[in-house]
Image (cartoon, rainbow, N blue to C red):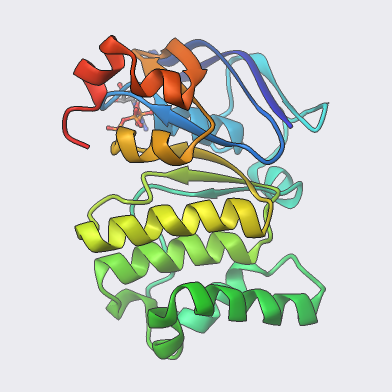
Length: 236
Ligand code: ATP
């Protein structure tokens, strides 16, 4: 479904990705783990067109997308839920969700998708008329993920969905990600600091270090890899 080939991405003179290649098959959950500053967010932003690569190729469903605008890439079905809680603070929960679906014309399906996100996050249903900016941090995180789902993505790029959440909510978020993958057959590329939890729900994983892919394997193998264990699994 997605093939990233030898991508080099820069911020001015700083090279954040130094020849990264990954692939994601339709229906998979793929985890991307690595230390702070390894380039994980940059890789997601490069895929969705926000920080275009200086060289390399990105194929989605067999077609090159590395020169397309973020809007165009979004309309192809690649939707990013960015790190942090970039929701619209002055719009209500419901309006935030409507924004996620703004490119869709299938009103009936939009309504049933909204019911679906309200069923997985009842807290958002209770607060559907509340302004996004007045939600708690965890609720904003749920809203960001739900808004991404409202686009009916073919591929969802999740950047640290568990960031700043209380432990009980972290478990809910990981369960939800698993559901999204199974129920909606949405393909997921998941960046997470909680590497063990991410690898437990993923089929495969990549370890990014200093802008390059250091390791790639099926998730179960990464979970018992000595290097991965000592470097990334200690705290999760
Ligand atoms: P974290 O887990 O801390 O979020 P990350 O693996 O997602 O880290 P990136 O945010 O992709 O890492 O950063 C990769 C490198 O690119 C870092 O050295 C970072 O300082 C640099 N970088 C990221 N964004 C910018 C920017 N807007 N301008 C300049 N350098 C940047």
